[in-house]
Every structure is written in structure tokens, then in C-alpha cells.
Image 1 (cartoon, each protein chain N blue to C red):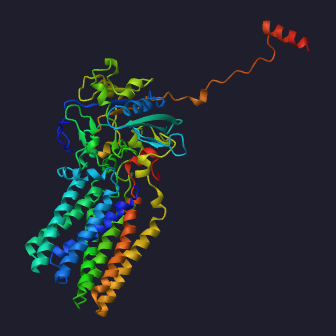
Image 2: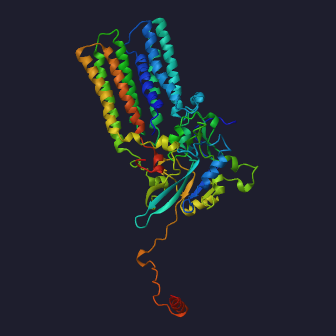
Image 3: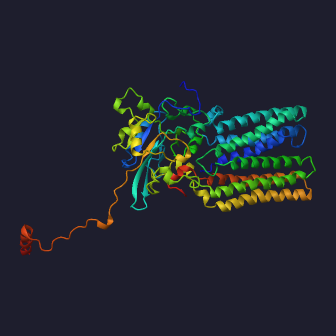
Length: 309
Length: 252
């Protein structure tokens, strides 16, 4: 699949934004006062809105994006739009009350937290629902998206809490969160290694229906040039350096933040240091997300030359 | 348009209009590709783009494309199969249910899968959901394009009755494309499917395609051990040829 920068940026930043929103709504300890009540929800909102806006860049007609709220009965993309807007609205209300009264209302926080998880889940399901892309078509996809979102949000929230709290206990939890999250991603990668179109029963023989006659090979594409399908879904560049990029994602996105968090925890240092850990994790996630798209094979590639096409 | 936007699939359709494509007969001439593009660039929806048509990297949207495959049996030489591919108007169309706006829909009256271009946001998710590559984003209009089964021909009372079938079917010089109601077991197309063992493409995807493909008929396998060989030319011909040969020799 073609790794569109706008979609990679969207899934990473909105994931972090909704993760922070979850921490806010779930009552995670955060600085108090008017500035905190304004800037922390604003940061969560900004990250997710920046992501949502960037995702509209890959639309052919962004001016009609409002229409996407109508088909929640069948479409995960529509559900995502509704969940995102509803959660952001609730967050706005929560932040307003927090600013005015200085109180973080639990009964309003719980729907904010639940809405954040739901939004990330719907985003992941847009990919996980696709039978045409075997790499994505697994429950591990939403699990990874949710864990990455929660871990990014946790690092950011714990980092911001470092402004007021001297406790470094959250750094210990951060170590665990980062390890568990990447372990899930590792399981996703392991599954992806053994999951292919062929393994799920789709081959050039089933695609053409000619398997009962013999082995099938593409002789000529429909046109000598590229087309939308080959550009969008028959993308092959990513697979060449996949192993190196995975390692890079693990070093930047897992090892580096774990080392930072571990140091903070053991040295009882300020959790403010978890902010750079968050940046490292997010950087690693950009690589992970790029691979998520670039490595995925789509069933239509079977009509354009099969494996490796 | 009075249609209520809804991307849920109809429980059932009154008819299942679709195509039956004969892989035995198709000669790979691409005439259906051209007539499809010609009709649909001026018919339903916006035109079908062609960018850089005479340049180094021509690209454009097509609703019908012909692939060419080589199929090699275990015990016989390879043969070539031309393979036309357009929307299969699936009964369980995944492209419809993923649509966030209601632009993609399947008609309950005849089962045709269509895109209401004025509602399409160009997100491309339907093209991702389709295993067959039947949907292409138009590079100029930025809306999703797909086969309409020439919905503006088949019911069109302003054109002669003989033309009221999809442009690809009308134009095929080999008679490799057939159009009809596949829900009616007595229709010509259903009988053809029954007789020739019509098949679904990628049935494992669970899309229940309406369009069917007729497999190439078994080839007569050449018997290589007793293949006829050309007899050598006679060294010393007799009769008229012998006289002619000698006469010409004498001329030097």
C-alpha cells in the first residue's frame, strides 16, 4: 500500500492526542490551575485536530468531508468521524468546567476517556476490517493502535505532571507501558511474516479462476504505464529495507524511551524527562506507521504480477 | 436525486444485472476498453481523465481493463488468456459498506453498484476494500470511478433497442461479453453460466460477485510423438515436372 504522509501523520498524532485525552478524562494526576486547565486539553485537542485536518489532505474533496458523518451504521470511517467530533466536544466542555471551577469532573471525564479509546479503535478498524490486506486484517491491529495511543498519552501526561510532582513512580509505569506496547507490535510483525495473500488462500490462480487449468503468470499489464491501482495498492518500495527500518523503529521508539524512563525512575529524577521520551516514541512510530502501509500487500496486486508486484 | 444516502447493502435485489465474460472467446483486442471509455466519458458522471496522453507517463481512469495472463498446465504447453476486468457488482460488495458518505450504493432494483459523484469525498477507502481493482480515483475530478453497467444505456429509451446493453458488450467483435439478469435462472446469461461452468473470481473474499467468467475450453493437446513431418522434395521428378526440370537444365 502507498504510504501517504498525511495518513501516517494523522494516525500518529491523533493517536497521541486521544491518548492524552484519555489520561485527562480518566483523572490522571496533572498540574492544576488555569494555565494547566487550558493548555493541557488544548495540547490534546491540537494533536488530534492536527491529525484529523492532515487526514483531510488525502481526500479528493475535503469540502464534502461533513458528509462522512452520515454512514455510521456500516462504515468505520464514518464512525471514526463521529467519535472524534463527539469526544473533542466533550473534552471542550470538560476543559471549560476545569478552567472555570478548577475541578476535574469525573462523570464528564469518563465519557471523554471512553470516547478517546473508541475513536482510536474506529481508526484502527478502518484498516483491520479490510480482507483485501491480510497484514491488517487482525485483532492485533486495533490492539497495537490502542496501546500506542495510550502509551504516547501516558508519557506526555506523566511528563507534563513533572512540572508539579517530584514523584518518579510514573516513570516506572512508563517503562512497563513501552515494553508491553512494543511487545504487541512485535507480535503483529511476527504474524505479518507468516501472513500473506497466499497464506489466506488468494493467489493469481484464484484471482483469475484459471487455477484448474494450471499455473498462472502475468504476461501483460492492461497498459504500459502506471494507474491509480498500481500507484495506490501495488507499492513495493517499502519491503526492500523493512528489516532495517523495523530495527530503527525499535531503537528510536522503544529502546530510547525505555532508557530515558528507566533512568528517571532509578535516579528519582523529574518526570519532565518523559517529554523527550514521548518525542522519541512518536518518532519511532512514524517509521512503524510507514512500514504498516508500505509492507502491506493488497489483493489487487495479484492482477498486476502477484507476489513482489 | 430522491435516493436516501445509505451504504448498507440491500437484503436482496429484484434483479442481478451483470456480465458474463467468455475467456475462451476474448481475443484481447481492447475494443471494449475503448468503447467503455468513449461512452462513459460523456455519459454518467464526470469525464474520465487522460493525463499526459502523448507524453512519457500517460495516466488516466478506466472502468474496464484487459490483462493478459499465461497459464501453464502440468502436461501441456502454456496458453495465453486475455482477461477483461471491470466491476463485478458483488452481492456482498465491501466497497459499499465502507463508504463513509453514502456515495457508494447498491441498487435494490437491479443490483448495480454505483457512485453518486456529488457525494464522493475521494477518500479512496472503497478502492482499498475491493479485491478486484474495479474502482479508480479520477486524477482530475478526484472522485471514485467505476463501471456503471452503462446504466444510462440499458434503460435508455432514446437509443435503438439493440443498443440498450453495456457499451463493452455492444462493441465486442468476438462476442466474448454477455449482459443479462443472473438472478433469473432461465436468462441467456444464467444458462451460459450453467453450461460452461461459469466461475467467481476470488470466491474466498466472500464478495459473492454477480459477474461470472467462463473458463477457456480444454485445448486439444498436440500429440508430439506422431506429429506429421514434411516429406522431402523428390530428387528426380518424373512426368511433366521431370521434363520441365530437364528443359530448364539445358538452357544452362
